Length: 112
Length: 116
Image (tube, rainbow over all chains, first blue to last red; front, side, top):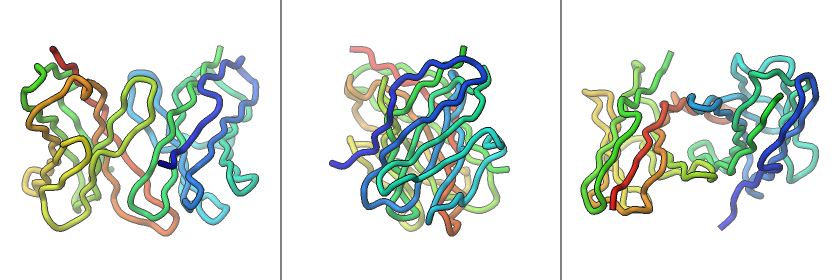
């Protein structure tokens, strides 16, 4: 069964550094998403992406964040200058239609 | 703003016992409703969803959920729990579909422990 994959599974970075989290959505999907979950808190929506542009973003998704679909298979989330509070599990999701999102296993980002 | 409440942070049940996990949402209209499960080290797996129609929906792994409009609830149930059901369960809602994808709002999750 096709699945969403994410790399790396765990990323440790120093405050102020740039990180890129990578996702490979399911191949025939059209809608792509990033969510995050700070330890002990809710899963929160960050951004949705469709037709090579951002469809919607949350207030969390400020200028430090960007997303890109650089080729036909990858979907990336970049954090330009990481802060301690960016430490979280980041989930990528994709959907073929507008009803059912499939989630990846997540990337745990630790900012020191 | 829409919100999702899962009143039970932790629930412990014995294997073979029935299970009900509660979910309430706060919004004027009926949103799309989902239950996801997260096992340790795994991503979020969709158990079931409700958009419209029959208020009792069946999902994977023997789970079902009932939408009750009068109570703004979408509780998850399973008649007989298996040890492998131990995981964290998230209720999520979406207001509806926009042109570029839908946005899920999650509850805080309920951690299920199954005693053998």
